[in-house]
Image (cartoon, rainbow, N blue to C red; front, side):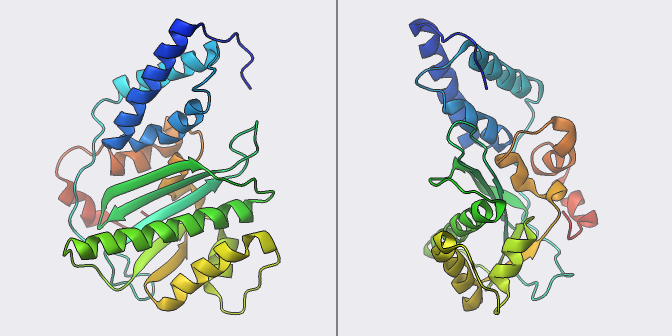
Amino acid sequence: MDTSPFLDEERTKMYQSLIGALQWIITIGRFDVFSAVTTMSSFWAAPREGHLERIKRIYSYLHKMSDGKIRVRVEEPDYSGLPNFEFDWSRTVYANLMHDLVTGRSLTGILHLLNKTPIDWYSKKQATVETATYGSEMVAMRKCVEQVVDLRNTLRYLGGPIRDKSYIFGDNESVINSSAQLHAKLHKRHNMLSFHYVREAIATGFLHLTHIPGKINPADMLSKHWGYSDIKDILKALLFHRGDTAEMGQNTTTSR
């Protein structure tokens, strides 16, 4: 936790202005700094000198990695190794337990892809404090399902064709299994509504949950602090690919 002196009024306004600009940068596609900006936004009212230095580091990263942009990829992903694989929409979800050391709240990270193109991203602290990873992951899963329903309806209203089923990829196997297995029981009553909401969505047939290892989960960058070397391969595929994006599809695997 930062214990450096608080900023004066003038530099506090500068800090708030820098945060506002970063939020617009995220809106136009640079979701790779979303989790960092979410964290620094928590100190909007009373920032410290250390917080301002962190903001400068975010801008330094954006300056160095200034060629990041979303490449539209219209081809459908090849998930032929998964059951009932005809779909065009996928998303990844992750929750970082106790992201906020002051309040103990977790951070939800969700990335939506239409075919192979990122179209929506979400990173926000959860409203409740969860005492276990399962609880924070289930809250994140419920939020993801709510967004799936909303985005599918939006595409329908716009007249866009969508497949019958969408896929969600998460790296918490307990949440995946308890949501998908009919005989699963929940022993945490405060997670009951999220639990049943997710299971009902799966039962209707428009949703399928699949487990993937955390190291290849793109939603990780939206919910935890990371080093570039840890996620450079994922970032390159999403924001920094050079050349024709059609060539990327030739070697696409289920793990990606």
